[in-house]
Image (tube, rainbow over all chains, first blue to last red; front, side, top):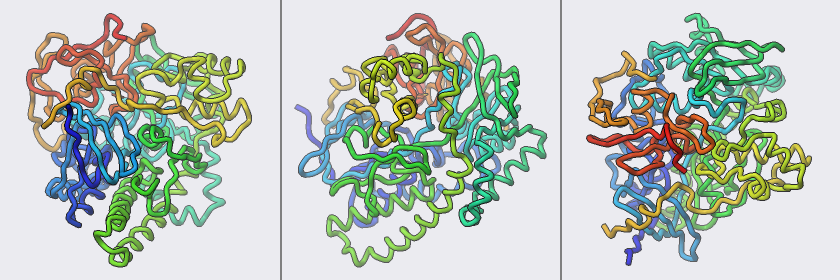
Length: 464
Length: 98
Ligand code: FES
């Protein structure tokens, strides 16, 4: 028999939201258990910050900003369990049940309250050749930089849409490996739209200035930055050999072996989806988001904090972690709602101000809704099961009416990533072909295990 | 391939791992996938069940393109496993592992 472990509060994820929630709960005398996929705290944004491999000269000040939080988290009395995969969640009358694979083996937990802080992932955004070795995400490139100060041995081509693209280009420049070319796939209409929204531009001026400064630094260093690119392909036999792109109506080809792409980030959906929580399509973020109350609660015993609930960035995630923790405390009557009122108000105020500033990014980096239509028929939508756009379109024409039917027709979403890479594309294709809103189309049913788990790992139940 | 930038802010602590039978030193802060990308690059990382060549895409546990054999266990997510002294890593570049 395996022992059932118990905790008042569990937090999934040790990025800024999870760390901040845990720290605030610990301050109030609780000892939350924190499960995290990574070996060290910080999430993606503050990865390796407890033992940094690169400094602010390369990474920029925003990376170092998380240092105090990581240190406070590390010192606080928290039941932190790194390298842990929460592979299933179950709702129970008195809380949540969790199945976790830890370094010590499989464990079962019951917790009274649960905070999901599982963060964001790079948006899966198909283009011809994106399955070739030599295509990686900008997020992956940043992980290599943070984890081991690793930069490519070759000059990479950077392509996509979003602030991270320019940040990475700037970091590579600082790290002594400037990129060969930066291809900005944000539609130029975004810049025009910005001129019509002076208030949003003003609120987001911090982001704007930072971006302009980075672009200026790249241009000064002689790195070509092309705006208004609207087509992208990777070509090669067993790895990338050439990058093709369309700029001002004509296709160009460039020999290259490494293409780093970024098409924005979206909430990592698996745990919230596995609980069948209601989600809605958010047009600003161009993404499905789980429904949350103003206090970030998804039900009486569940909270979703940070980018996993909607993209707001690292500082916002930290605030949301605190907000979720405050609501947990109020629900436990540990601190009275009155005592928490001021703290909560200040956090909410800052949060709303920040989210308003982000509208600028949403306007500037809007992805084109007809992107998939313009990709060649043989472009893979589902990488795991190698299902092409043509096959998906064919199945839709045959009458596959929703994501789950499409899965049964084509096997899309049935591979090891469980639809994380193709789920959004499948919904987008269905919405366009059947002329229905994305909220009507919905998403795959996600069933546990939400992480790949072997029978051996499940059998390794341990009582320590 | 990837290399350690000359702008790294400290010398890396190294561990010895065997990659496809060859012993090498890699920084101890790396994941298995990152270590393989450093020493071998993305070519020859993995063969997919449809026969195509694949390599890590996200390095954050999402895409499952980094599947690799670690200490005899096939199809481990290489980006989620830190390297450890004496670890045996084998790329799944040849036969199918499905
Ligand atoms: S590289 Fe994407 S899951 Fe490991």
